[in-house]
Image (cartoon, rainbow, N blue to C red):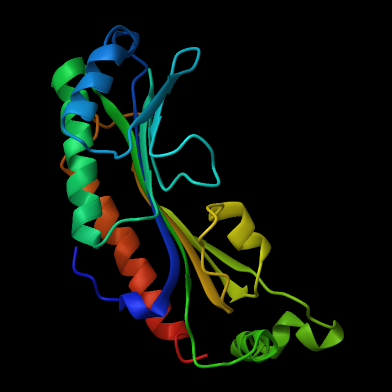
Length: 237
């Protein structure tokens, strides 16, 4: 969980970790106890919670313009979203504490994990001093076979899907749709740069045993590694 990207080069960043498990109605019976335990441990501050039909949302704000941290759970998934953490390790440690509380209430044997995913979305600094230059340098990465010269490019978003993961990269302009969609809080950094969106996961195959909880750290590490690899390739644009 080493912090290998300097915070001075990160404009906005969010990590989303989700655990899916075999649907279990026991979760609904323990919603109140989970809420009280999470509040007692001060894992989200300020602590705002609300019930849905079968789900619970806990957040540090009442609306998306102020929310930086969210816990969501229902009978088949637990999700933790944070865009305001200090280090990779602090994010991982907090998620593990949240998951520990959840399993203590539900019962470890009742959380049969079918999928673990970790998504990292961020915008980052590069050497170019204008959006047009960043876009031009992005276009320069691609071979002629992409037929880019046949069209006048205004923007670019490249996505690659690989075994157990995907990433999307592209230039970011001020007030970019990527920013407005994924970083809705008021004090986001609207600086030009480039975006990385990477999602890595492990899933239970039909013939496999359920996924051990210890795999959570492996999936987080995989996403962080992809983010760092892409950052190192793109930071000189």
